[in-house]
Image (cartoon, rainbow, N blue to C red; front, side, top):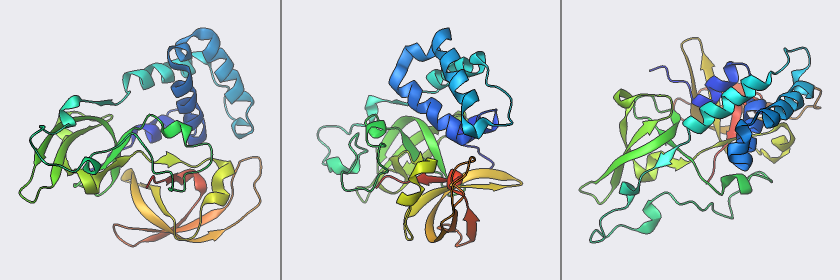
Length: 247
């Protein structure tokens, strides 16, 4: 199944992943103001003048506004039906929390961004992780485990899946920024964007080796040797393809 995560699709439509990350943060902080023409003009000018945009077409304000508008329409929703009936004895920790473990090694500056959590779920069809649009229903299994029916952002009802709550649902992973490469250590679990001729999706991986390099105008040039969890294949990638996995 060839699924492309919405945030990666957005990066391919004119904005780099770094720019998408900046737009995401601005949207979170600014709300409805992000749709105003003046705000979009300022953002477009800032992106155009950034070092990573050198040699690329200028960013138009209406392109920024269009991105914010689509992001508003795609905002994930979590429905109340996730809560089990009061008579069912289910451990509260089994359900996703809007709190992040303070002991988890989140990159500095990311803590505030995680105050309003979004979620990702692992598909049983290809073992990759996708952003959750909404939780549709839940059911209790014989072994007191819980499954949730999820809808992925950017996909229709025909792609809805039942997934295990404890094993296949977690807070959304966050792309690293260039300045955060020093925080990635050998042995760290990460989410890696894997691009092949017939697919472009995210898989869990672990960092095996790091080649530190001097950053330049393009940003982080370090190389990370990672091993994918699902097939044990190894690949050298740059930071732009890695996301921090909340624990």
